[in-house]
Length: 160
Image (cartoon, rainbow, N blue to C red; front, side, top):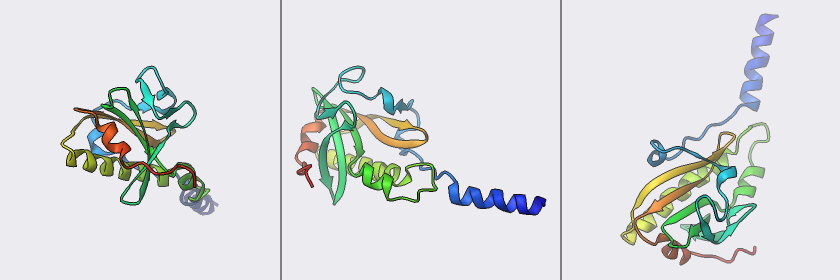
């Protein structure tokens, strides 16, 4: 009987387990921000392309990767999110209790954004993971210049 119970527990863990995606290493020494705390206006001050329900609402595309961004007035604080969050969440294994596809997409988006900013001589000075329930929903990045205007040049029509 104990063997059968062990097999059932192991099977349930495999079928219904959580898949964890690690945040980017640049955020390791900074506190995470809860997704529920990232809002337009206070406390961070996203005033450009921010939606109270979905967070970042400007859709950009870098190397065929859909990314959503929002920024503060000066453009030196940017919220990066998965541009295909709903698709990535709904098309993954329904027995996995995390949005690993979306978390991976956000990590990819971070490095694509970082590369574009570096090409324009703008550096990321601080990175904070935006997370909830073990999922990485985005990153808040602080910059040494107005990177938001640079990223806006990658805008795509949000209607598909």
